[in-house]
Amino acid sequence: MGHAKIEADPVEVAAKLIRRPCLSGAEGEMADAVEEFLNDLGYREVFRDRLGNLVGIIGPNAGESVRVLFDGHMDVVPPAGEWSVNPFDGIVRDGRLFGRGATDMKGGLAAALCGVVAAANDLSHPVAVSATVLEETIEGVALGEVLDRLHPDAVVICEPSGMQVKVGQRGRAEVLLTAHGVPAHAASPERGRNPITLMAQALSRIELMELPIDQTLGPAIIVATDVVSDPYPSISLIPSSVTVRFDRRTLLDEDAQGVLAELLAVVDGLDGRGFSAAITADEVETYTGERLQVERYLPAWVLPIDHPLALAMTSAVAAAGTPVELGVWGFCTNGSESAGVRGIPTIGFGPGSPEEAHIIDESISVEEVRTAAEVYRRLAIAYAGEAADDDERHDAGHRGG
Image (cartoon, rainbow, N blue to C red; front, side):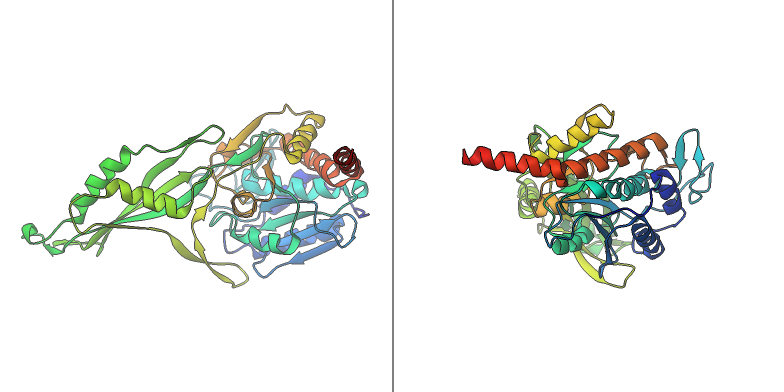
């Protein structure tokens, strides 16, 4: 079995992590700090992959796959606005830890680092913690590298959840809809076909779209977030095309091609040379220099509330003295990769309120960080300890009997 070298206060660990500024694509200094913590805490195997993710494994080294992986991301969004504290000082005031990333999500990552290793002596199977990169840029892609190596039986996303147990999330498609026109001099508009007018008609139709609703995840959403002409700026010229970027929040059983086909069907028949639609695909670069071409389609996912992972999580939350509340995230997480793409049982729980993320004077309750660490400790034991073995033996006997 794995043995932790030291005990650590997750609040102190989170404060130290806050003091390592780490925007997306520049997480190297933060990764060095996480690697140091993993080694000091006593994780028996620590590695950094080609994308720069850090992983620590605890528990027996029996040559088996990881029973459960706890995931948190290292990157943060830039601080903006006038703060009352330095965004990267990591100070505690009035029971709250302040700093960029306190809620999203260095508090959750620190709780996982400390809580999981505290379970080391009670584990019968390997458990891992990953600190991943680029989540604020493109959720799930970096976690995929970890999943390829570890093949965990289950995944816990430690994003801020308001201490709710999150059993799912809507997905997201970033869609570009382009209206194609005929360019002409603005003094002779009759000689062209204006794609701006065409797109205005399209937007009116899209506003009236009937989108699906899921009993657990709620309604699908489509909202325009950007518009640009080609050329831009188009001065004294009717442009050749106009493109609108849409944020489309998706539900279960939706896919990229279906989202595009649905959108094109809505605008079909409008005058002009027509429309085209595509999912955006941008290149991102990690701090290790790896370049990835990433399609921005993130699937939705839901874990049944009677799944063993959900039952184990709710039991761990209750045993840690926290009221058990179930919910779903309205935003995307790395769970889009583990659950949405790969079908790995995935659940979410983390300290901090999602509404506290990315704001001026971002902060997190120190009590919640410590409670989350205890929840993670209990869940690791429940899912990868002797109690889990007893449950498996009972289930096997029941199936055979």
